[in-house]
Amino acid sequence: MPGVIDTILDLQKKGLNDTEIVAQLRSMNYSAQEITDAVNQIKIKSSVNGKEEMQPSIMEEGETEVPLPSKKKKLKVGMKEAQYPPYAAYPQYASTFQNEEQQQQAAQPDIEMIEEIAEEIVSEKFSEIRDKLSAVLDFRDNMEIRITNLNDRLKRMEATIDSLQTAILGKVQQYNQDIRSLGSEMQALEGAFGKILNPLVDNVKELGRITDRIKTKEKAK
Image (cartoon, rainbow, N blue to C red; front, side, top):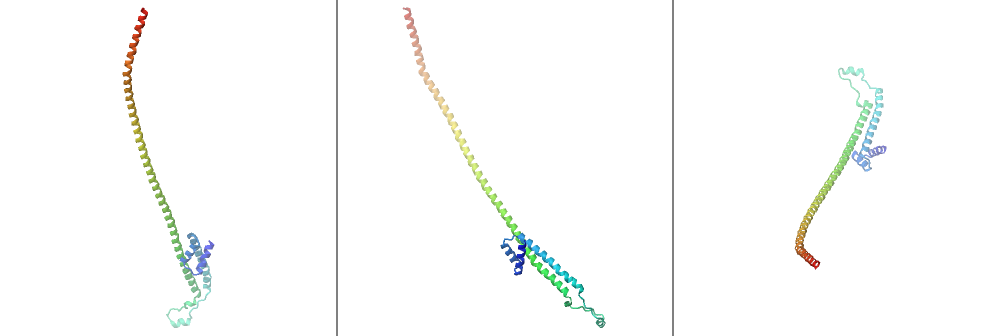
């Protein structure tokens, strides 16, 4: 902080105005808060120094003799008002007023500088808020894009699942049809075997009867 105060005092001695001083300090990487604190300290010190300079003037004021008009002049004038010494006869009052005027003139640049710094602080705060709002908007846009992409992926997955389900149902139906066809073929084959086997069975039975007859005749002999 002392470095900021010394820098401001040096720039004021060089004749720079408040805007130039603020710009110079900002170029030296001083923050707006540091500049404000330094200006307030300078203002407090200048006020304290001004009061200390006024005290000797007030003390000397009581010791200064104010010349009074003589009785002879008062008699000659009659009812005319008493004449007072000119303004130059009060040097201590004049110096006091000059000090007050100088303090007011010195305080005016401080007020302008404070206003300049306040505007700088407000501008910085608005800039920070604008940056944060921009970051929030960017985050919202990114989230919307991600949600949109996720919805698209879900839709594609649903379409794929529907396609798989349709394909599986088609395969099951085809399998049922194949089983039914196989059953029909088995029945047809069974019928064909029945037609072939029945005569063979009859022939075998007939052959058995013939064999029994032959055996019976041989036993009878």
